[in-house]
Amino acid sequence: MAKKKKTTTKKKSPPPRSRSRPRPPMTRKKSPKRDRSVVSKKRDRETLDKIESLAVDVTKSSLAQRDPYLDIPLRTTSNTKWNKSKRLLEMGASTQRRNLFNLGQAKKFMQTILLAKGCKDLVEAEKTLSLRGMYYMSLHTIAGTKEKTFAEQGESDTILEDLEVGLDSLREELHVFAKKRGTMIGNITIIDNGDEIDCRRMGTGGYAIPSICEPSVIQFKDCEADFVLHVEKDTVWSRFNEDRFWETYNCILTEGSGQPPRGVRRLLHRLNKELGLPIYCLLDCDPWGHYIYSVIKQGSINLAFESKRMAIPDAKFIGIRSGDFERCELSDDVKIDLTERDIARAKQIMAYPWFAEKRPWQKEIKRMLANGFKMEVESLITKDISYVTEVYVPERLADRDFLD
Image 1 (tube, one colour):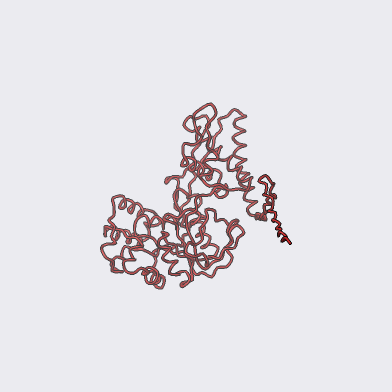
Image 2: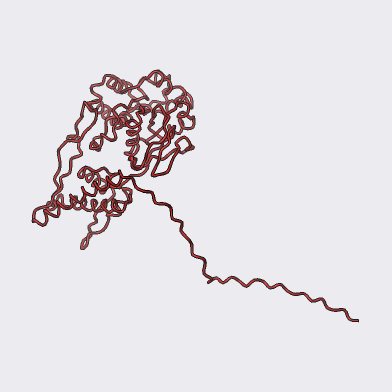
């Protein structure tokens, strides 16, 4: 009897997936839109009214066949005044008139109107742009010519500052911001555009201080800090952060990467005025460190029109000082010879009214000039890596040894 052949059935493989087979549509999850504060809306309405008023004035002059013009307050030393009672630099009343039909002023007149239109569009759209973005938004070649509206961004930035003072509206109110520069860490919790941020838990990088630090964007929630220590550079800031200085001495630690930008100065002003926190500045012993302190304390000539919301008259200078070379027994290696430019700048700073009347500052700068050298905060590393955080600043704080 013949054996039956065993039959096997092959499993059918699934049909190949068609490449043209339509995929299910992707659904985009919409994030909830945050309600803008009443303060923001009111401020935006006021800003729009100012821009529209400027446009109406220009239009009326044109229709009446008169030469349209803009009056721009001068941002110069001669138009800056020292208010001794307020301890602030303030802008004077002098202005420069820009006429459309003046060949020397026509370009700046048109640039100002162009940027005013751009700012109006931003405010109405409830969006912000960087200074660089504003430059590109307004950049084009004028029809029938090879002339561009702006040759470079610096030209656009200057006109924006003119527009600020001309409208009496700050750059932040025009919805324009600068590049972020500056860092914060310490015993405070803030609300940034609706997001809660605990500055005690920001790791090695810290919280990047934004360009716009207005109450409509940043609110202070919980703060246990006793003071703010502002240092000149991020390298020094990193040492204080790594050593957990802000935790040991219950403070907020900030840095401005050299000359602090407007956002950092505005935040320091608010921490001082709204929370009553003293501001102590740890800066280099050179004319530039002294100037940085002057700007933080009294305001700057270029931005005198907003000193009242940026300057901190009660800020204190905690170091480095010209006598620290001997007091801290530093080596000759830390000396940096003063240049002729340094000497000229130091003498100029000595003549500032807010320094001229203060003997401690006159003595400090004269001693630096007599030494013939300047020093950086980092020079203290030659004593010990953590000398600045464990000895120098704690001693200054304990002794209340500051320059005012």
